[in-house]
Length: 351
Image (cartoon, rainbow, N blue to C red; front, side, top):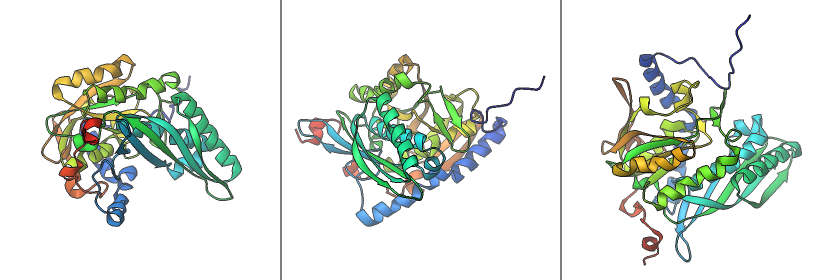
């Protein structure tokens, strides 16, 4: 009997040996298209001026003090054109997922989403159907938007308004904090797109999954966070370290991953539920607990330090990937003292 064919969307490559894996991880990080695509963000700094990373560009969502306490959040996403071309329905889902995750990574939740779509009617219809499906799964309304039907390439963007009681901004990352990865391991890897989707596998649990982030923010169990994006786990971590100029050594043996996805592939993937969290060291296990309660993986993968270097360790071998604040990831620069986040809505409003 012939062997069963491998599912290419579950395994992108064979698992390399450990020495080879570390070399491959370094090479993939430095050539990761999703990470390299972040460097043009320097244009924002050049045109609009410096940002404090909280009320202005830089973090997953911008935060402004809200009337009556708390924060008003705003975020926006243009969906990766290759995904839109390959699967407009999945692009519509991604438009909702990306905004929901951005809000969660700042310690908040979505109040509503608006979208803009341009393209041929059959394609924008599929994208809208994808957005509708995701909005039902996450329990977030689509409030409206803009639609232009025309021949040519299709483009999909979406924008969200949300609220938070306590923020989880990247500028809060500080030496001594535990670095955790919370991630859904049920799912499938779309070969060629580096997207690990858990939307179908966790459909009825998605809304509750992202609700954990505001919970750990408000309880003080988590101080800073970032959702793993198109830059992959390590590229997203570089963006988390950049504004504060801190560093970390990632213990790759501790990184939770799906059994059948090789480590180099996983570190460059974009999971539909994946968050990097910074927690007080004495509260790290308590921070992980509510994720475990929902069947999500959450493990300590390193400790934030003052070196300013992003390093990885696999077994007894270690490599330095970057100095994010010095070399730049987004080009938005290191946050000044004014960029330190208010610890609560009362502090933000001057109460």
